[in-house]
Length: 442
Image 1: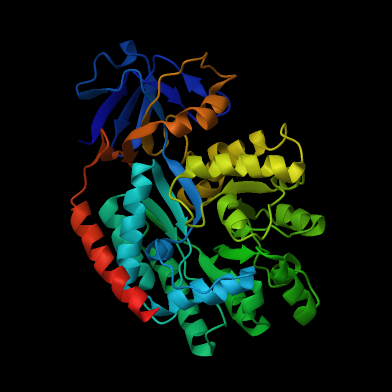
Image 2: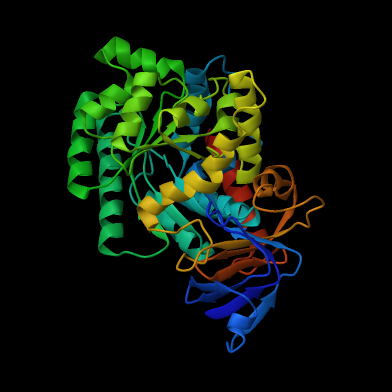
């Protein structure tokens, strides 16, 4: 079904100039929104009409920082207790990623994507690590992306923590993946140059990466000052704060993503804004790891584009943004601050970030935008209009069921049922089998 009309629903466009459209229909053709108009304007169209009367139609959600590879951690209780963030890395994540095999990478991604589809996410910017299964790891993840029909930007996190050989493999994996995306463009798969964090990267490695980034004309995707220890390490060993060090290697540009940024100072934030890089906040992860709460209000005031991701704590973007708002209230010690900044991160800034890789209009419902659309079962019980829609999104729509998920015009889920050539129960059974083996190796 390449050409069809969605009719009967109330449209949230995520376009600030016309955020709410009542009694409008969407003509989808060959993966794109061809036109938005009244029933009368489409009266001569000969194509299927899908009635979503009484539902909310809105853009597919974007997760701007995620980790597919963490899927098999659910329920794992073998990690030693951690008293600080570095211990969390050493006791859990750096033990886990060393044990991942190629098949684990594929099934981790597949499970995470299926859950994301159910929660209305159609675009994911992922950050991967499997130091003893580096080669072709991004291709394995890409296979899961293509089989499920979502969009994803992939990268491999380069780090010196496992030695020179593995660091070089990570550089090559990023380079080959980005080169492949550039030589074989498609609307689903993109690439960034992944880096773990500045405290696990030597000047030598950053210099090599900088040459590759310049050659590829791409951005980086890196964890930045997630914990205060990152800043302390860089000051003690290099005499510079994290963002200053990245900037000195020309790694900050308008395609770069800096995840977390809990401990950046004002000087660093101004530098990020000047370079046009984006910050992606991950509130639930930061709270879980007790590293602090990013000052999204200050970031916004200083001109930084702030998006939001889940860091794999959840696959539910609307859950993440709600927690982000409450956390910002606490950070500002003021319940009147933070709502608009966090809501804007999801509805306005995540699309702006994704558009850097996929092109204009992604993440919005406007004529010419990719047909990435979800349908939510939500009937407002208070006035719903251009002044109130954002409050409804956070306090009402977030609690409703996503009934349909469409990406690039293809219906991936309808009435809560996945319409993919994938046996979800079989996939989950295989995932349990692989996770058990992974836990035995842990």
